[in-house]
Length: 374
Ligand SMILES: NC(=O)c1ccc[n+]([C@@H]2O[C@H](COP(=O)([O-])OP(=O)(O)OC[C@H]3O[C@@H](n4cnc5c(N)ncnc54)[C@H](O)[C@@H]3O)[C@@H](O)[C@H]2O)c1
Image (tube, rainbow, N blue to C red; front, side, top):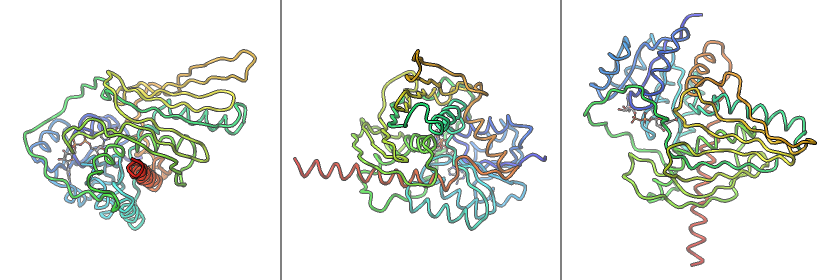
């Protein structure tokens, strides 16, 4: 089978630290034939470092390159959805970083472009490609089908991350060029301006958690119910460069199961996130490694209280010495080569955007209610 010819848009942090090295490393499956970067000197430096044949100063120019079959995008959160639309319209299959969109309105435009173009869009929710999470997903499905641990009754996701890079020391090019202003973000039209940064903070981080929980619980095509949401904005930091995290609790009902997300941040040398799924007679627990720590999968623990001698088992997954970000890129390439569906489609990610809007609306209602009762 011939190698997939890939173009890459946006040569910033995620591109240089994660995706470009991963694509170049998959040399039997693909070829990185072109990049686009709006900062010309940075583009040149990245082109030279990775010996990439073609360089363009914008994604619209790269979109015209007939040699490029598929494009990966990691741009500004406000602009990357619009870049994806242009690339789909130009007839390219697209892999784009999360979040897919800032609002349901923008997500609908992206899905419309995908439908009309007949091309495919994959959203880079790498947690679905972590070998530990794949094992957890299989165990959940297995226990729910067999009923041996009783009913799945409650899920808790604790996400108070600290450090996420895990000492990743992949070299990176930098320049003093100013980053051009991104396009105006397409916020939900009901969202008050003073709440935009809080909304963005939650969306940037917890769209990952919502996406993973929906996959674990098997509701790819259903909206999640939001029971309650209450947060406090964590200490002010320069906006919008630094994303703000929201300290609080969200209670969802996913596929009929009460699911809690604890959010916030803690100064920690490591990534502090775990998910525990409580059945009537035991649980499955998984801890997320530092995201950019290579070849360390999410842990997998099963407690069985139904046995004569109750016990806890820890498993190391098949293909465990792998990195979720490489696995997601392999998946993208493989699906384009053999036509199989993506595990993290854009249509599915629409449910994260809908859930996000519903969570934030609930939070604003809670604030209004508290104010009324003052
Ligand atoms: N999956 C994850 O774990 C994860 C982690 C961090 C960030 N992200 C996501 O990745 C995205 C990118 O983050 P980053 O830290 O790499 O950002 P960044 O600002 O470092 O990089 C974006 C790059 O895109 C370039 N660019 C913008 N518009 C362009 C255009 N039209 N054509 C060509 N180049 C263009 C910018 O000049 C910049 O170099 C964000 O949306 C973020 O949410 C995902």
